[in-house]
Length: 364
Ligand SMILES: C[S@@+](CC[C@H](N)C(=O)[O-])C[C@H]1O[C@@H](n2cnc3c(N)ncnc32)[C@H](O)[C@@H]1O
Image 1 (tube, helix red, strand yellow):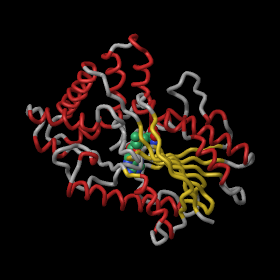
Image 2 (tube, helix red, strand yellow):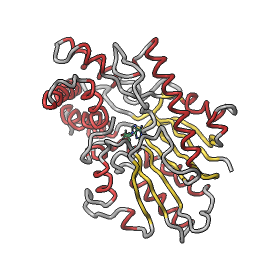
Image 3 (cartoon, protein in one colour):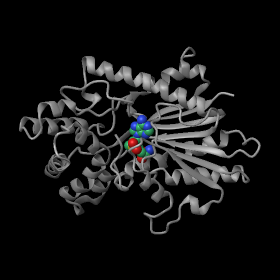
Image 4 (tube, protein in one colour):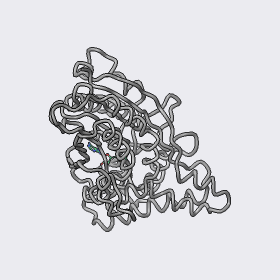
């Protein structure tokens, strides 16, 4: 389930960039902790689930600058990973500054910085043993390696109950172990891992559910309406489910605290864990505009940020016998209905980001 390509993702996802920028101090702390590179080896950094690389660019620039001031002679190697169908072309255009007026990116600013990309999923080991100094990932590890089952009455695990809820939770627990063991193998002793993961906080809040209108319930209601009106079939409704799981902070920390877990045995240790909410920038702009922005203008600015990461899920729920044109027309209607709903009654609509911020290190 890759993001919408062509640079659409980071252009419409200011909130995800805010999350990374707010937490960039964690990356700088990681630079302070890594061991000096051995015998001419580069300092290595990886961004797991990077999409088009636009949202992490400033934070990685700050990290590169700090690495350079700590180890002035060292080369730096940065690996961007994502799924094979990610728009890697947009990633490299962003890294070269093609989408920016100044074209000033860290690649132009710093010598001896080398970038490469890996289009293989992060549930497995992607880098050689003990080759990584700093692993980073933002807003990506909630994606499961596969959807374990369908969800009859909802489109997301936050609305699942009974057997489907358990199947998603079991899949997520196994995936989290696999992710952490893989990263533990990749990290050098003393290497650092910084992850900003979507999750459910201590008050039960999660993305788009922080006290106002629940975004995932709205998705489910509008999609259900379209099946009741026979715009889509019942089977298509049931076939639509985000391959995602929002873990609680306890679920995130469990394998790092259990000395018998393969993660702990592989040497990964928890440094810190906390949850935090970053407000929806589109909602904030609307609130701050007072009467200067209409409800329709808010809706038009807000829906693309939802669409940037959710469109692929609704498209893939539709019958593959439909023409591509038909599938896109259905999904256009779906988001237009969401926009109309927000324009009619904007109160409570916001996609606030709820994350669990984790810092880890490889013992040694
Ligand atoms: C919401 S975007 C986050 C992008 C960026 N890290 C940010 O914070 O803005 C999630 C990214 O994770 C990627 N992703 C999902 N499952 C993945 C997997 N199994 N392996 C690697 N990347 C994955 C998606 O393709 C997408 O680019």
